[in-house]
Image (cartoon, rainbow, N blue to C red; front, side, top):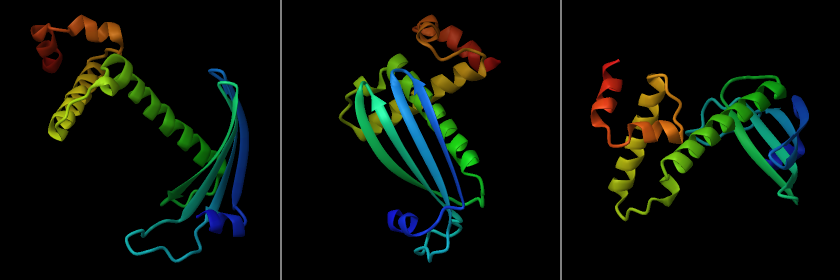
Length: 157
């Protein structure tokens, strides 16, 4: 994709700047119409997206380029930019909850099945709390810790 985007003109572009959490980030999103032969198994790719990010994080300069593929024939780089930001916002929020509140990054089980089971149980806990109207934050987890009867009531709602 890097070569394709270097040789072709984008059908849409957008740039924007964000400053938050001690970071200054510029983003340039370029949207390309797929006019290439895609390898077997990659059917339906209509667009390529190139995202260039640069700026400072923790007072250190950075520059990175990411590529995405789309199956929907979207023609606006701004719409794609919002979708990418929305995805990462959800992804980052979920990982933060799982790491900070449930300590997933500190877990060191040696068995892959144990890891999978712990991840499934954490997902059930987060989704059950959300479905019951609770925010999955540290105080909420503490409220239900070791209170099996209170947890069972959440499943009855």
